[in-house]
Every structure is written in C-alpha cells, then in structure tokens.
Amino acid sequence: MQNFKLHSSYIKRHWLLDRNVTFLNHASFGACPRPVLEVQTRLRSQLENEPLRFFGREWEPLLDNSRKKLAEFVGADAEDLVFLPNATTGVNAVLRSLKFSPDDELLTTNHEYNACCNALMFVASRVNARVVVADVPFPIESPEQVIQAVLAKVSSRTRLVLLDHVTSQTGLIFPIQQLVKKLQSLNIDVLVDGAHAPGMLPLNLQVIGADYYTGNCHKWLCAPKGAAFLFVKRDKQSRIRPLTISHGANSTFTHKSRFQLEFDWMGTDDPTAYICVGEAIQFMDSLLPGGWNELMQRNHDLVLQARQIVCETLDMMPPCPENMIGSMATLLAPASLSANYTYISLHDELFDKYGIEVQVVPWHQQPKLLIRISAQIYNTLDQYYRLAKAIQEIIKKAEYC
Image (tube, rainbow, N blue to C red; front, side, top):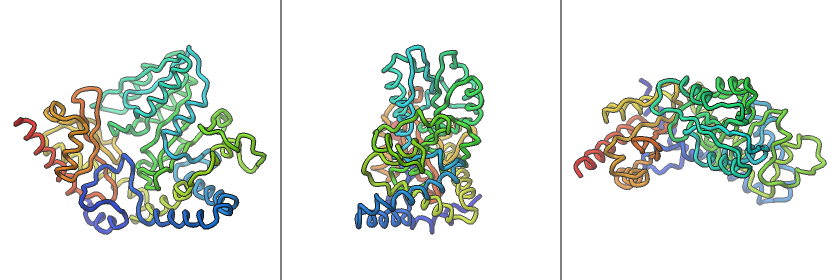
C-alpha cells in the first residue's frame, strides 16, 4: 500500500485549501496551487502596469507558448487548439457553429453533463432536430456496455454524437477511442466533452481521433479558474466560430489560421489563466519523481482504496469496474439516505456537521442520490475513513427517524 499520508503531508502547503475542511471534491472546480497563482498574480501586475504594451506586444507570445506546452501534454498540434474559459463554452461553440436540419438526430447519453445537454437541446429546438439519448446503465459491468448502448441508438439520421470522456455524475471513463472509431466509420461526427480528462488521464487527441474535443485545465491539471481548450480537426476548423464574433473575423493577419485569430481575441478579457496553463503543467509534473505518470497513477490508486473503504464500511458493492475509474469514483447512496435527504440537504449535513466537502449528485434512477469522491495529491486515506464514518452515522440517524 502506498504511503499516501507521507506524500500529502508536505504537498498540502502548496494549496490554499481550508485546513478545517476535509476536501474530497477536487473534481467540481479543481484547486490551483500557490506557485501557479503567484505566476498569475505577476502576470496580472504586468498587464495592469502597461495595458497597451501587454495587449499590443506581450500577451500573444505568452499565450502561444502556453498553447504549445498544452498541445504537447494532450497529444495535439498547437495549430489545432484554442483556449476557452471552460469546456461548456467549447461544447456550445461547436454546437452553435454547426448547421442542422429537422431530419437530423443528435445523440448523447443519459450520463452527459446537464449544461451540455441543455446546449444540445437548445440547438436542436431551433431547427426541430431530435435529441436521442442512449441509456448507459449504472451500475455498470464493462466499457462494452457503453459502446452497445450508444451504437444501439445510431440511425441513418444521426448527424452528431456528444459524449463525455469522463462522466461528471457517475465518474465513469467512457471507451472514447473505440466509440469515435466506430461512429466515424458510419460518417458521424463526434464531439467529446472531456471536461475531467486533462490531468486525470493520459491524453493523445490525435490517437483518439475525435472531430471536436474540449477539456478543462482548471480541474485535474490545476490551472487557474477560467482555463480550458477546444481541439478541432484541421479540415473542420473553417466551420467552427466562437460564440463572440470580434476582430478576428476580418483580421488581415496571416501568421495564424482564421480559427485561432477568431478564438484568441474575442474582446478585452483577462488572459492570464490561459497563459498559466503551461506553468500548471510544469508545476504538477514536478511534485513526484515520476512526474505526471506517477501523479495520475497515484490518484487512481488512492481513489480505488477510498472507494473500498466506503464500500466496506457501509456494506456496499462497487457500481463499476476499476478500469472505468480515473481519479474520482461514484457510489450509490444507501436507500435510507435517498428516502430522507435531497442532494442538497445531504451535502449540507456532511459539510455543516462533519466539515466534509464531497459531491452529492441527484440521479434519475434509484437510489436517486449518488456520492462522488475525488482523489488529488493533497488527499490522504484518513479523510475517506472520516467520510465513511460520517455517512454511517447519518444512515443510523435516518433509520432511527
């Protein structure tokens, strides 16, 4: 068993997290380490010291350098990447750019992130296209069930498939590479919502082969809030436009593609989160001798042990195989909790009474509530024992009432 406590005792000083809170929800918004925030503070001072010089001369080389480091990290050409504030914006940019007709079907799954489902429904409703939802089971026994569920809903009218790489509610790694290959063989474009993947999983976007892939940098990569990216295959870039049309639409510059000219400048904003992505990649790589590979494996091993602790304490069965988990794991809430709590009230009791910050997720099937735990390098096993004990106490109280 790894000594997770030893790893984390000296690591925690790099984060601003409240020491009085057991923080087990890195997945929702991430947590940016102090050294990266310090770089961002210096960049903001540089910006405000001479705004005209910064935006006229300095920001673009800084942005391109960060983009180059990100491209290397995710296995893509820098020319195929643009920065965005979050993955939801990336999904919207693609969906709002593509043209659909009333005969088209847009396919997704019942695990897709709510915000992105809303974007899909909005785009479909404007032209009376149909949104089709593949029912992926949870609990689940194998990645093959995901492939079967998605392919079973494909028809001759399917124009686009929106898929999570790592599902938000259920924490499942979908077999994206296999799905992309099968769908593209049917001439169907694939948009991957990879919000949780960068920094959780080794990525090679060229190998994955999706037409469109968007991912957050503020979650597992630990960049500042407001940093994400959109990857678009070179032959499809001309049809993808940003949500905000600005100077890039008729720029006479030729040193970049129209795709990057439009997305890189959508109006005055603070670009320092984007510029810090390269810094975050380098900093997180420095924390363990094995760099990113060791960090991702360490977080995976930790969340598996954490899941085992909670399951054994509450006499539960894990709802998915280990190979479908990255750095977060979702468990079914016991029936007594679902009967007596909403996702908000259970979350609040865990936080207010026990000082535990963990994600409680509403689910559309029984048991109606899910509990999602995260594992980042600052977490330790004793924190998950604390969570298991707290849930056990809440269950006893619910059963008594």
